[in-house]
Amino acid sequence: MSFSRPDIIRPPSEWKSYFLPLTSGCSNNTCTFCAYHGSKLQIRDVADVKGEIDAVALFTRSGIRVPNIPGVVYAIAQDWDGKRIFLQDGDALVYPFPKLREVLLYLNEKLPRVERIGTYATPQDILRRSVDELKELRQLKLGIFYTGLETGDDELLQKIGKGVSSDQVIEAGKRVKDAGISFSVTIILGLGGIEASKKHGLETARVLTEIDPDYVGALTLTLVPGTPLYEEWERNEFHPLSPFQSLEELKSITENSSFTDCFFSSMHASNYLSVRGKLPQDKARMLKQLGKVLAARDASLLRPEFLRGL
Ligand code: SF4
Image (cartoon, rainbow, N blue to C red; front, top):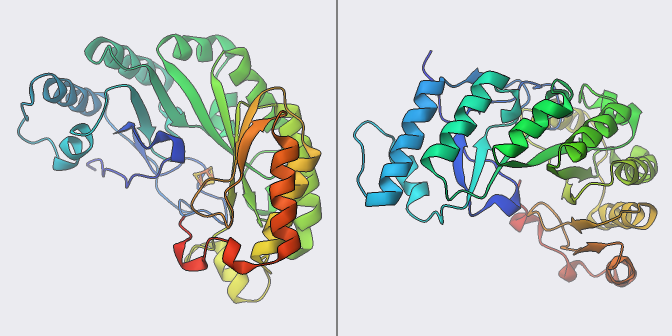
């Protein structure tokens, strides 16, 4: 079966990157809230990946377009500053290790101006690799992993089909940090609905503190049609938080977590309010901002529902 190029789903901070698919779908396609639920994982041939790298290298050097290379390659490459690459798709770290090394070596050779390569990585993908293997990837400029913790609440992790415990995510984070790779962790506000909100907030703060990542990105749950969680909501078995309840959760997580040096934000388009800052130094300011909005309970201070994105 020929490889189908995935749509671009990326962390907000990778907006300037070139998007290079190694896989399509996600190897852990069981998360009940996620658009990748039930997706079929496809692994792209190394030769095909190298062909795209050759085309991008030639195009960025001389503007020449190679026949049979899809237009999207040039659409991305024409505005690209040559510095960052994001490997697609849902968990490109699942790409078999020897092939990943081969692709990274090739990228380093053909596009030497690249400064950093990033990827989504599940905790399971990370735990399959030793610290030495991760260090090898780091040497080849794979410099940041984006990993979904989603929640630190073990009961909820199991319920949403994440396939890992909070201890496993903590161990994965330790390996990433030991390898010198930046670690960016995503959490999802409202994931447990009204009933699990308090525990979700407190347990997420506990696990984030233990991981002590470089970046935390908070998203707000958006129910995606066709996912099991959406169907639970249709059956009235899942009770979503109101926008202000989701901000209460964000406040609880900010208040109860502690970090050495972390950029913490809710800048993603799914959120009702954008809060950002370096922790620990900006904690008081961020809590004050949240406290003010929560006290005012004024919906005009929030991103309107129709402007929220996935
Ligand atoms: S591991 Fe991540 S990308 Fe894969 S299904 Fe779960 S949330 Fe989605």
